[in-house]
Image 1 (cartoon, rainbow, N blue to C red):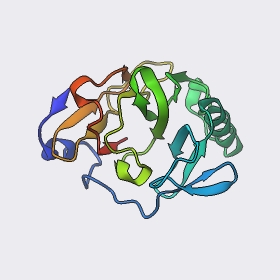
Image 2 (spheres, rainbow, N blue to C red):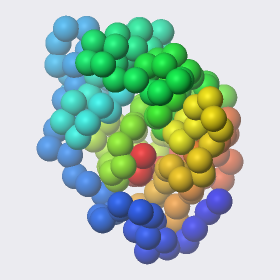
Image 3 (tube, rainbow, N blue to C red):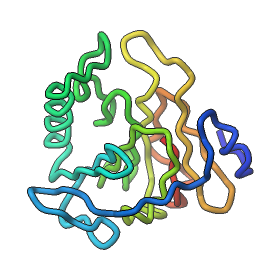
Image 4 (tube, rainbow, N blue to C red):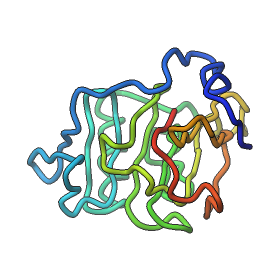
Amino acid sequence: MKTNSRAAAQEQPGVVDRVVPRDTSLASFQGRTIDLSKSWEGAQACAVLSRTEVRCYASREEEKADLASRATSIGVSRGTAGPIGTLDWNGCDEGWVCIYEHQNFGGRKLSFNDEFWHDLATWAFVDMTTSFTNNQGGGLFGCSGSDSGILGDGAGDNLTMTDCTASANLGTYNDRTEDIHG
């Protein structure tokens, strides 16, 4: 569902500012630090774990294994659905919203699981989103209807990504995204 105002996006529960600036675009990838605003250096999937921690992976399989291992090691559980990395849809783990570079969930993938606005320029992903999966608010008990994500085009036109939905092609919104609210 599209909305045509910045105010509509800010009315989302917990949303204070349209875009939360990030201090860094640095991410860990294959034992080194890369600057995603300049190059993904071969990474195919990146997970924004927090405002200050981003991890990138050479494949989606590597991302899934690392996130599941990380969740288990710190005792995180998604309830009966198991730890992160066990219940995925289009390669997007339960509790996450994922955007993809190409249609049909192809190309590079960028994942979020927090409730902040993010400027996609931080990760060199402006005007590159072609498909999405919002795998938040679901699990084994169905969708709650309370964890929508929003894609913004920077001009006040927003696309709401209702929880437990996916789009293989954004149509007229293809390659128009400048920011995201997870």
